[in-house]
Amino acid sequence: MTEDMVLPAQHQPVTVGEPLLEVSGLTKYFPVKGGFPVRRTVGQVQAVDGIDLTVRVGESFGLVGESGCGKSTTGRLITRLLEPTAGKVSYRGQDITHASRRELAPIRSEIQMIFQDPYSSLNPRQTVGKIISGPMEINGVEPEGGREKRVRELLEIVGLNPEHYNRFPHEFSGGQRQRIGVARALALEPKLIVADEPVSALDVSIQAQVVNLLQEVQRELGIAFLFIAHDLAVVRHFSQRVAVMYLGKIIEVGDREAIYTRPRHPYTHALLSAVPEVSLTDDGDSAGRERIRLAGDVPSPISPPSGCRFRTRCWKAQDKCATQEPPLLRISGNHEGHLTACHFPEDPTTQARDEDIVLDPALAALEEEG
Ligand SMILES: Nc1ncnc2c1ncn2[C@@H]1O[C@H](COP(=O)(O)OP(=O)(O)OP(=O)(O)O)[C@@H](O)[C@H]1O
Ligand code: SF4
Ligand SMILES: [Mg+2]
Image (cartoon, rainbow, N blue to C red; front, top):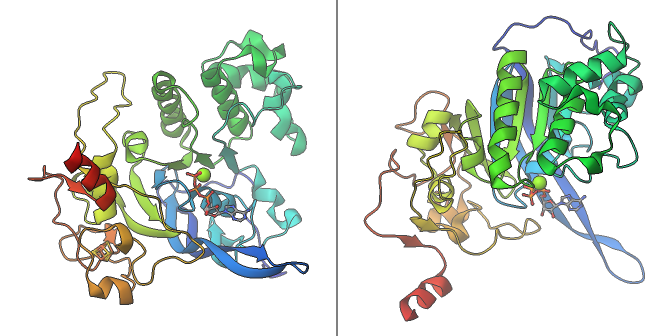
């Protein structure tokens, strides 16, 4: 960040729908150390490799992909918990990529994070009141009527009893603890919440309740969300736009309808069909059929496959896929804003296939035997 950069004033009004967070070419490589007796860098974990995304004011943006594909690293780069290797992060038009703590101070309160594990993310020795008022204390914020009044209001907003102000985290269930985490994230009236798998650690029956709460918060308080999840089912009812990540790259992005009803990337097809539809609405419909089984692990991000990183698991891969990396583009047949990185994309439909596609030969052999 340059010395003369002007950071946005706190709580400056913004117009709904304009870009809030813009990320371009964002990259994070972690060094891999090895050797004895002198430990040297012997490789790089290409955790996030040149991603672009924009989250608009008040919008919920879903970021989805299998374990290890770089979702949390992306969240931590955006919230500046990690320093990027390359690329740019802009918040409300201001470059914050390398902003110092002091330079970030005016916008720290506007970007909050909700973590996956409601057990480890709350200090067990602090009361709920202390936990939720923590961000106000750190940032020296004194709301009208005092911090305690504000905490009680927040407890009410997240569906907890305001009288539980003096209780400790262990007195609450997992779902209730995640509500406390949500209340803490709301304490400073943020404009953007990065929610890293906020329901993955909860029982399925509780997940819907917490997703519904987040949805209410997003709609009623106009807070933008970057909602990180490992499957498409969780973000389905929550995100207006969705990006699918694979091995450090965004391989498809579009509005909800495009991703769920006209996906083009084979990996998006696989994610949609490999995860049985888990309805997160209260009217509960859990229909859905497994058609593509994505077996095996994501390859190592230390030496990802050449060309298209999905090629080692792709049923459509051809020679070109090994030599040329497919750019993320609006390919023929895609509506505006729907981008796909694939040389041989699927037809724009999720209609049932004639046969199951099994991506792992070992699994196929087992099935034949069985
Ligand atoms: N501090 C670190 N040092 C080295 N490697 C790291 C570090 N943090 C993450 N990684 C590696 O970067 C890759 C991406 O990790 P990340 O946690 O971002 O993935 P994720 O998509 O959030 O996965 P999960 O679904 O398991 O949470 C992984 O290979 C991981 O091992
Ligand atoms: S570029 Fe090739 S390997 Fe990659 S997803 Fe498309 S068809 Fe599959
Ligand atoms: Mg993660």
